[in-house]
Image 1 (cartoon, rainbow, N blue to C red):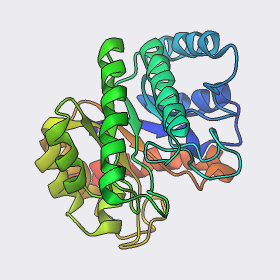
Image 2 (cartoon, one colour):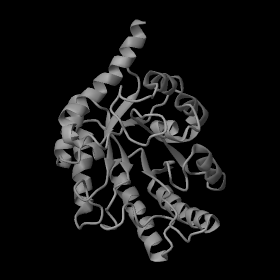
Image 3 (tube, one colour):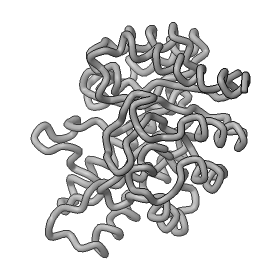
Length: 282
């Protein structure tokens, strides 16, 4: 009853060792893993990252699981400033560090055979003009795209509430200049910004989506919620993805649920499968 390929994001298993998290996700029946690179889950900045990535690649291959690389770790590059530096940071060396991190994430994605490397723009700091921020964004994303093309990994930009690229229209404007860019579509974010009906966005952007994140969300509030606890029409989103014949991973992202990941990982998949079964019976 479920034709979609589903993954679970490791940012929702932050209290588990990565090998244990992958095992739990696999045993629940998911088709893949959305790997958020972080200090505790395959730190890309530490010596030995390549060997750890190769070991993970063997594990995923043995389990016949796909992979998406996520780069939203909060304090990986700067322990004192959340998400900094970004592609919009005024300091050129900081922007270069972000690009280097995204390129390293792409390298890990190549080792893992990842379907996409997902990233976001960042928030312009006070004193940075919109014109300057957009110029830095184009420069940084073009560098990331060049490296991603060389490594054979799709680079997918995720619109994030509050960031320079906040909406799918912001993404469209950037993609007009950088046509190799793909979309990391978080369906819940559409409910936060109110820009599109999530299911309608799937149909509109199906041709350029690199990966999809799904969760429940209260309208206008950027908090990832377990299924059934928000305002999202999850069955409608699943219908839209199936109508679009979406073959890539649809990634459950519940970053606030690590304290009960042992229960939430299988429960989330059961909830989604229940949606499809209810549709089939109806």
